[in-house]
Image (cartoon, rainbow, N blue to C red; front, top):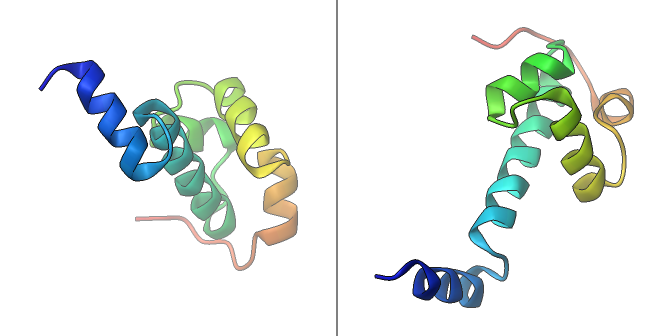
Length: 83
């Protein structure tokens, strides 16, 4: 299937482009890690494939309307290190 056809069909079914969908999924993964771990933002960015903490902060703020650190303060509960 041509890439353009795939992108059109993906957009029609999901409502977002593949790239935007992937970024959204990575932000959701970051939210989970911020809620449940004490990992630094830099480590979370690396773990979820964002490349850098600055890139994570940029996309996180656009998606969640807050910074990762503020999100952790609001929603971080019992903190534990993941396995």
